[in-house]
Length: 439
Image (cartoon, rainbow, N blue to C red):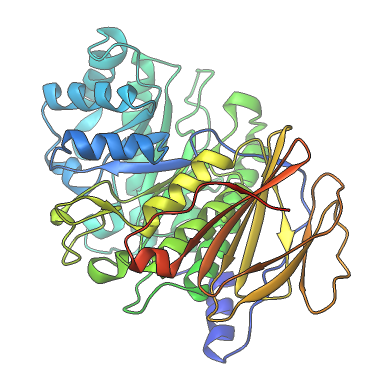
């Protein structure tokens, strides 16, 4: 069952009421350098897939999934993948089985972090994958204690080998209020310290989400992620407060699998814009990573379990790919909140101290005239949608964005550049434009 806040939201949507993209007042939030992530699946990616993943700017690659809980790839395959991941400038996150027991998990940590089988130790790990689904959708009151039991035993064994690793989980298929409240509440207390040790059982709350819709993703799907991300932030904040976890010891949260439902839905313009919006939401609520599922599978055929970010045998980048690249390439430093009265105009920004980047996603079928107001001040441009950015002060900037289009504006050293990517570009097989000066 979704969180109560989500159930209320869905009820509003069912009644046809618009849901505003509200701006919550909050301190400036640093953007994780590992925010843009992806997943490696069984079919070993070829050299071109690895190179495209590098060019997309992927910063974290998870080796995980339900299949790995039962049939983990052989050690030499894992070593090769970890080396390849590092070779493209990304960090690995390696899953151990929820069924394999503490000894096998500890042996895998020893292989990589003591024997250095792939060079540098692996810092990020996870335990298990979607236990509710794998165990036949049991009652959460039964599931939560069972997950806490295996998670604590496996985590303690892994950290006995290397106390510096960071462990994520339980990688459930959604954020379930009853389940996660029990798991991270005072009774089961998965966020507590391992008894007698200076480290904790879990370092990152990881979860998944695939909007279950046959239509192209849009505002409702984006709002699902917004509500869930806010809820994930609330969970980790409560745990951190209860156990005085701060700095490197603070519990974080991560979206370790997401995409549209699969098949035809992943190869749509709307899915690409959903990715762009999700990364803004993840920045807003301080996500450690948002890792899409996956690099390449099912031949990129747009059927079955094709969740690739490249299409077909030609490995043509999809809109999801290009939106990931735009975020990775231009959005770093601190997240800039934004608000707009237009539901279908999604806007957010980033400030790295030298450059301000603004992402505009027009989900509507109409061109939109907008005016950016910097420093938290609304613009007064006539006949333009006012967009307020809680950024450094600056003059109002007016512009236009076409229907079903994505635009990135770059403000740096007194100059403004623009990048455009439209549905028509997607249909013609083109990627985004190069940055071009704006008068």
